[in-house]
Length: 321
Image 1 (tube, rainbow, N blue to C red):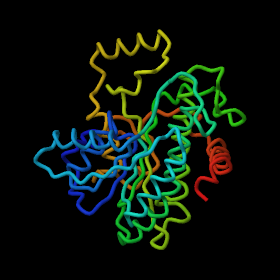
Image 2 (image 1 turned 45 degrees about the vertical axis):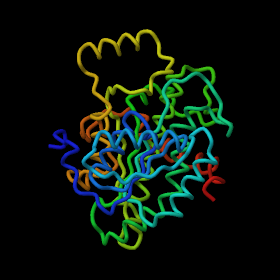
Image 3 (image 1 turned 180 degrees about the horizontal axis):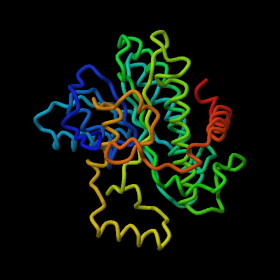
Image 4 (image 1 turned 120 degrees about the vertical axis):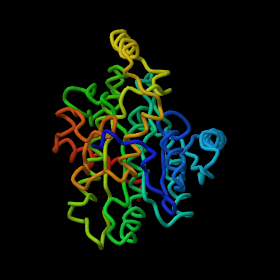
């Protein structure tokens, strides 16, 4: 049963390469550390090299008996030029990539525009990951081809959240994605809805049943993950209504909160676990490793998925050209 997954069951990942964004704290930190514990070469994305170095030192203290093979990719999701630079740096060093975990995110932050002219949550949670993933997909397809058809050898995981239910009731506001007049949670919900729709597009384009999925083109298994109610730093600056804060405290009192390590388990199962099945590709997962997660009706809107991809290609195309 997938819900019985534990990271100790991960296979030996020697020779495999992974990237985890937002890997200096919380779920991303433990996702990267567990992959490295199982002998993968892991690239952690960090805002600065200094933060990355500190994270690696902390990971080494967690698993002192395992020599960890970890490299740093400096990137700041509020600055898209650093995203493209990080991808170029990786591609100059590596010719294979087995797993990408799009984990970095901010939650319900005060309204702010980035230097690129986008609302912060929309860019950090969605646009930056879309650009980064687009630049890395070609090497992932090539990796899959070299794996001689091994099922599930190359995977992408997009972190989303049950917070996607908080998106505008009519879905993504393409005319003005900044949603300045809306709450921080509504902006967060829109970005998390986009993460799900992005994963569905990747699955449709590169999944095992896609038109391009063959031994000549390669295959990528794609998943969306809602990690659960996790103790992490993502909500430190969140502007959350009183009733939601009360619900959080109640859930914490009831023992529903899990630590960040366990919060990483579903991501680990989806990016490298043995137990994931071909027919589970493209699913929305929730803790722990349950592929029957509850997603909103908007998350299954095929028209909105297509429109989002078309819109994003138009707006972000210059960053991947």
